[in-house]
Structure formats: structure tokens, C-alpha cells
Image 1: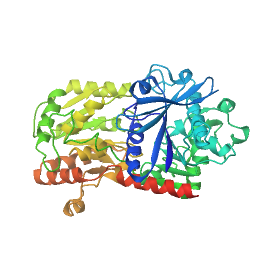
Image 2: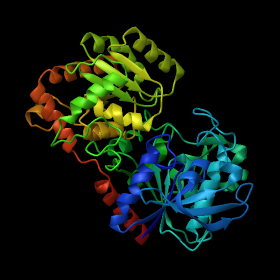
Image 3: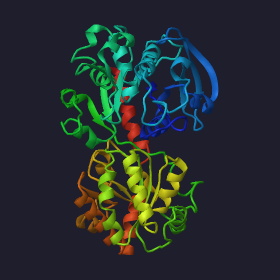
Image 4: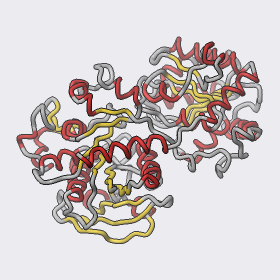
Amino acid sequence: MRVLFVASEMHPLVKTGGLADVTGALPLALAPLGIEVRTLLPAYPRVLERLQDKKPDATIKALFGGTARLVSGRTAAGAHVLALDAPHLYAREGSAYGPTTGQEWPDNHLRFGALGWAAHLIGLGQAGPWRPEVVHAHDWQAALAPAYLALSGRPRPATVTTIHNMAFQGLFPGPMLASLRLPESSFAPAGVEFYGKVGFLKAGLHYADRITTVSPSYAREIQSSAHGFGLEGLLRHRAKDLTGILNGIDRREWDPEHDPHIAAPFSAASPAGKVANKRALQERFGLKVDDRALLFCVVSRLTHQKGLDILMSVLPALVARGGQIAVLGLGDTRLEGEFAAAARANPAQIAFKAAFDERLSHVVQAGADAIVVPSRFEPCGLTQMVGLRYGTVPVVARVGGLADSVIDANEAALNDDVATGFQFAPDSGIEIADAIARASTLFAQPDAWTRTRHRGMRADFGWERSAKKYAAMYRELATK
């Protein structure tokens, strides 16, 4: 069965967040199930540099201001890519979305409208001989693909839109409708219009045959006004077409037994190397080398969503308990400054590195005892799954995929030998402080901590289970 993924990023070619991890790993997990996936991706300069086995595939004329070509190739892991080589749109230095992180290109509506337009041409068999049976659009940047296909009036493949984060919707001024080749009739509440703007994600949610999101809990949460960002009514209306499928992690990428970036290999069966990694992390981040200190970590974007301002407020309590914390992340300049100041004031117990560093994140996950994820909302989250695999016990907000992947170490769960981490109510410093206190209490009981850590390491968060659910959905859609 043939499925076209449409996305703005894909690991290891280009990555700014968890979306790239999904689009990089899920196609490989689907292949053994008989699902042939090709991923349509903008040909940013780094994509063309890193793509292997490149060869021309098809030409697309008059693509939103210029001619483009499809370049077929593969990632290092073997995933098949169709790179949309449109130099007038993508041949730019900077991030995938703007000149620098946090900025946007002024023509992003055209850059990602073109991605959807190219996907719809491939879906209609008008861009090369390969034609998919399902077109699967990932997040707002790809979400016009289902709209273009539905509005084409031609026999078309089935379509899916996946929400990776409702907070980012791709909203552009209404007058841009014509430049996006969308008919005036589509600029309506039952269409692409969202409070006078063209809504890319809104279009994908309205026109796609099925909607998925990246965890079951998030699928419920986004139907509420607290988490729906204005689209909760549409999602409730389409509730029968909405499914939450929990993300996984690439177990080849995240494997502490064979990780080239860490100080010593270890596993659930042979955990001794965890000690060497903790000492290596303490040394690298300038913390006091102390096996007895409970070492927390954060690997995150520093944004309001991630709740790190709340964590900042409880650092004094963490330090007072003798704990340590290593923070790795970039984002809000105020938060960066506050974490840097806290580290300068207490360098033996608090460390901060302002960086987005994939290799260093392996070092942090391998060395820490626990990872804190205090998000106000979290569609899925991957760092807590990595933490489980690396024996780094998660301390997480009870939201979205965090709630779906971590079993709280309450008394009943500990007695039943099923606990894997700690949960707390989101948006509450008191709750975070309590969870840190509970983690500290368990850490002081080495046997109980070790059992909890090992249960997490044995948990299966690979892609196989989720891939079976996607494959079943594709086949159901194709038959209809």
C-alpha cells in the first residue's frame, strides 16, 4: 500500500522539534507492515546536502512563483524522500521557518502552500508515475494538501491530517486566499476561514477524511476550550473521525546499550554504566560530582507551553533538598537569563546550557537520575519516553502524552510494582514541588528507586504498536 507523508521537517535531514522524529521514524516502522511511505519534504539546502541516492523524479511548473522539481532520495536509515526542490521558496540560509529561530519568512504562506499543492498533484497522479492511496499531512505546514485534494473535484486518494500541536495553526491574512489558489467559496466557516484569516490547520481538519493526534489524552483535551485554541467546536463536530495514537521513539537512535555519545553503555539487564554517565554529566556541566545527589535534568525548548517558569520557582526547594539539576535548552530570552543566573548563584547544584544540541541531549538523558517535564500542555512529548529507556525517571505534568506514558508512583502503583515515574497537576508550583519531594523520598530508598527505574527501562515505546494502528487506518480509508 502506498502512502505519501507531507511534512516540513524529518530527522535526520532537518529538525526543530518532535515532528521530525515522528516523520523520520514512523515510515521505517510501517515498511514491515506492507506500507510503502514516501515523504514529501521542502528541499531546504541542508536536506539536499544530506539526502542520499539523489535522482530527479518529476518537474512541477508554475509552483507559486517558479518551476520546481521533485528529487527522489533516501535518509541514512533508508526512508524514502521526495524533496521539493523549489529554490525560489526554500534555497535560503536560516531555519526551516525563518531567518533565525523564532522569526518567520514573510512568504511562509506560499512556501507551505506550495508544499500542499505539490502533494495534491502527486496525489492526483500529475507529478510522476508514483501515486499514493493515502496522503497523510503532518501539522499546519502540510495541512492544505487535504483541502486542495478535496476541492479538486477529481478522483483522489484518502487523506489524513495529524495534529502535532494545536498551538501552531498557520494563520495568514484573508486576502492571501487567491495567491494560495483556494476558491472564494472555501473562505467560510465550513472551509479554510478562521476569524477572517486563512487557517492552514483549520483547512486540514475540515477537509481531511480522518484526523489524528499524537496521544489519546490529547485527542480528548483538544475538544475543550482550554486546549482547542478556537478549533474545539470543529473537533467535537468531527469527533468520530478523530483518533489519538501515541507517538513512539526510534529505539535505534535512543539505545543506551549502543549509544556512541555517552560515557559508558548500560541497559536494564546491565545498569552499572549509569553511574559513570552520571559522573560524566556532572563533570561536563560543572556540577559537584556526588553519586548521592538526586540529579534532575531538563531537555526542552524554553517556552510558556513547557512550564519551565513554574519549575524556576521551585528551584530553591530542589536545592534545599540537596538535589541537582542540569538544564539544556533554548527559547525565551528571559527564561534563559533566569536559568543562567540561578546557575551562577549555585554552580554546584544548578547548571544551564543555552543550546539545541542533539548529541548533548544523549549525554544529559544518560547521566541524570530523573527528567522533569512540567508542560502546561503536551500533545505527546518524547523526552519522557527517552528518559524511561535511559533509566532517567520522569517527573511529568498530568497532561496529553505525558499522562499516557508515565505511571505515577503512588502507593498503590508502588505496591503493585507498576510505577514508572511521577505525575503532578500542570501549572502549579506547589504540585511540582510535591512531585520533586516524592521523587527525593523514593531516591532515598535505593531498592524501590531501582525497581521503578528498571520498570521504565523495560517499557516498550518503540513505533511498532503505533505503526499497526496507522496501517489499519490507512487500509480502512483506502477501502472506502
